[in-house]
Length: 267
Image (cartoon, rainbow, N blue to C red; front, side, top):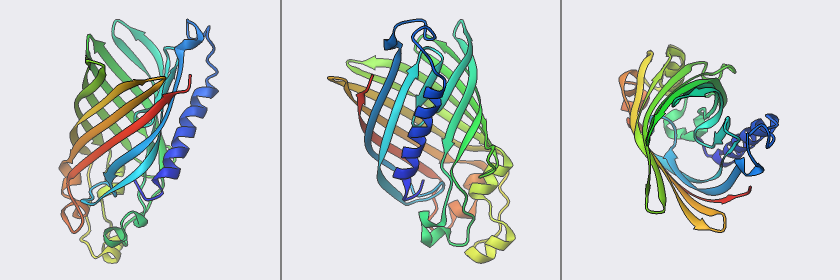
């Protein structure tokens, strides 16, 4: 994420909203009354690494958007857009779209000078999940069709959902695997850029890239307002952890995201 995070996140929120509106779901499509359509709007501060593998952090205000159209379409700022094609006995699968932030040398001029810059992108793919009681197993596979980072990402989560008094909570471990193109874009350094950045050349490979734990909560405040919190810790592993971008000056394998958003149910 970069210093123009607010504009980029606002663009992502509009993308999700437009994608949902484009589906043209009506009350009949949702198998129920208009209340089956929900849209939550909000804003709040997010703490995040200056770039993947960075030891420095930034805090920026971030627009927040979440909701659903019937039982088939869900969208959320951090999890992206999902359209369920089939579900039965706890199993479901469908299409997915995720907004992935790119990287620019302006993210950290001191430590990214000479390294590759690439734009944000919308990854497209699919998901499969299984839910039983309070537990959810979920896998998402997406690919960058715009050739920004040019790679593919496979993410797994095992989540527990429950209530702690008025507070709803979702938490559990997560694992991410990436293709060579993804790893090379974020953590690799080719020979030409090695000279420009004064770092050794590095060939990042496919495989496990990150393991961590994720939690999200919501506290109703009344009047359609709620306080939504996000906490995520991830540690880079494998080829990503060995990159000079991570092991060298300004780098760290640890990644923390913390956010708090005041939201309002628009409808």
